[in-house]
Length: 489
Image (cartoon, rainbow, N blue to C red; front, side):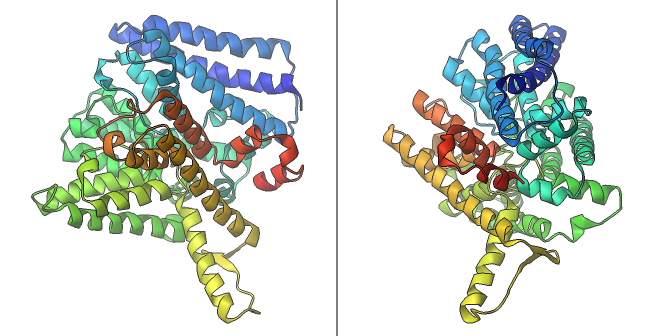
């Protein structure tokens, strides 16, 4: 392990963060609000910490896997700390704990908030809040690698540690092409949605910030009532379409767009993803019809938006789902656990793992009847290695264990059961809203400070897919030397 090299690469991340803060400061200056100085000071601090390592630490052509893990984890923690600075300097509802919570929630694209009055923030801070989503959605390391494409083998190590193993397997492309695909799809979807929302009547500012949140599947809105503020079927329809696209593997979207392979229409994972959203929508619509909504079309409107929003881990709201009947709440929490596809900006366990889990259950049942049979798990005609299947099943077990443990601690801190469990599910899955007072029209301000720190931990665990952060936190002697590479290869 070479700490100086780790500091150098983290410095690159802080420079990108400084540029983003400077852009937010420019927005503040354009609108003439009072957040310009806080954003500018934060940008200068981030740039200062970023430039010094680049000056004094020479570049290297190779990183070890341990160094790659440490760079990724340290980068996420430090950009969240620097990202909290504008909120702390601004004051208002932002204590240090609240600012840290809001910043981590932004960068991890969780979208949970402690703010009771979002619209009280100046335009510059609102823009920064949304921009943290956009940076975190693709991954801050990906932005660094995109701007510095000549990093060689070091870049390969960072990509391996930044991206989900499932996502990397499904790209079927080298590192350079993977970065190109991610950027083209990510920026392209953002521009298209911004134009579509502007056509639907949103201001340019609202169109841009809500596009940042949608494509990153984040959920930060500039309005207290989220998307319900606009009360527009056209706006909701556009956002639903882009939420669905943002939940699909970007490699599949790209290959389908250029017409080389129509994978989108053949993928088992995509079929399940779309079918689950449709089934969840119709069950929820039937459940709230006559209770929350007086007409079937209104019930379908609210149900489809809320199911897609949680099913893609976006977390926008066009209705108060915390007062819906119990069945609809259970469906929403299921989608908050599952979320969308690997290779997208979505959080949660991922549809891919649920598909592999189901196929493995069927295989195990068949093996009970035919113990000597050799029954491989296949996905889209290709054999899936047993190690990939077992890792996916293990991930689900560990994921649910973390939710149970965090929820238990929150309950011990005095938080009610429903907000504890649903809030942990929402933050672990980077979804945003839970149920009760942490629901779609509520916030996390009532959670005690200790609970907020626990929930920011689950946000980071969910965003980094658990293993990376656990390897970073656990004593090295607990993990065999070959385990790290096995997890990430």
